[in-house]
View 1 (cartoon, helix red, strand yellow):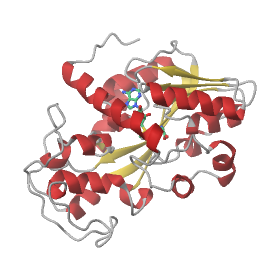
View 2: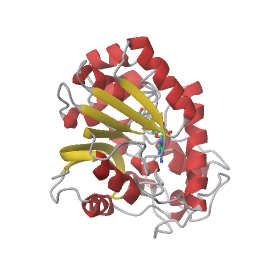
View 3: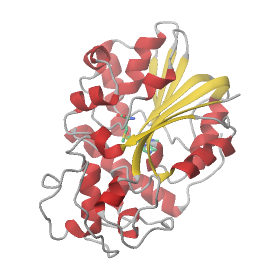
Amino acid sequence: MTEKLAGDNDAAIRDAVREAYAGRVVEGGSCCGSADPVSAAEQMGYSKEDIDAVGEGANLGLGCGAPLAMAAVNEGETVLDLGSGAGFDALISWRAVGPTGRVIGVDMTPEMIAKARENAERVGAGNVEFREGLIEALPVEDESVDVIISNCVINLSPDKSAVFKEAYRVLRPGGRLAVSDIVLTKPLPAAVAKNLAAYVGCIAGAALKDDYLAMMRDAGFDEEPRVELKSAFKVLGGDDPMVGAAVDAIGGCCSPEPEPASTGCCSPEPRQLESSGCCGSDVPAEAPAAEETMDLSEIVNSVFSAQIVVTKR
Ligand SMILES: C[S@@+](CC[C@H](N)C(=O)[O-])C[C@H]1O[C@@H](n2cnc3c(N)ncnc32)[C@H](O)[C@@H]1O
């Protein structure tokens, strides 16, 4: 298990993320996803059968892809879900592993853990457990897991290298990590990169794709990952709060303008971003090198929903 202790900034970021996601349990709604979780899940690649079987109360519309569609989970396997939320992917995994398999969900937000346990009980999933903990210091034994999945969570981690090292540690040799996450192809403007709402909304914490893959390789994963990229805003739909967070971060929150319906989040009008902050709080961390100005269409064209599968050889 990693010995890394969170620095002050890491802890502050996690506290903000935890608080925001505790609120989502009560309110529902979305971070990276559409306000309609059922159609969002279908659009991301979940089958109607899985959604109907476990979705109620578990599908909060917080994902940005369908990691299980790539993970090819087999009966009898042990699956670990990093940032399991209300248990949506964990409970779908439970259907795949059957009574001889096992599923573990890890999440740092107590309200999410409670909701996930409630959902597991509702569907009678006995071989599923939810553990409160950090994905950077997993409460999981070494080499005890066949498949790790994660849906729109690692972007929220202030220490992504630790997450991949921990994933590598707990996987058995030959095990795979299937991730849906937000990645960037270009640094975000500082006003977005430093904005806490944009961080919690799964955009400001996203890493550059090449850095993300390098961190996976440095942790020990194979050199040739399977990677698919799609425009995050197209995957997530037109009412995505990520766009709202980005727009707010560049100044819209202090004097709201009609957005994004008039422009559409998938093909917005160019809009010049100022580097000044807005009324939202800043991320209390060193932001990565960022552009000072960038128009909204450039942001949209730099933010991707990535589906990545890597293997522990
Ligand atoms: C965007 S939601 C995704 C939830 C779930 N994967 C889904 O698709 O519904 C992010 C989740 O990750 C959890 N999370 C974020 N950072 C975490 C960390 N460092 N350690 C453990 N859980 C974390 C949050 O509490 C929240 O439940």
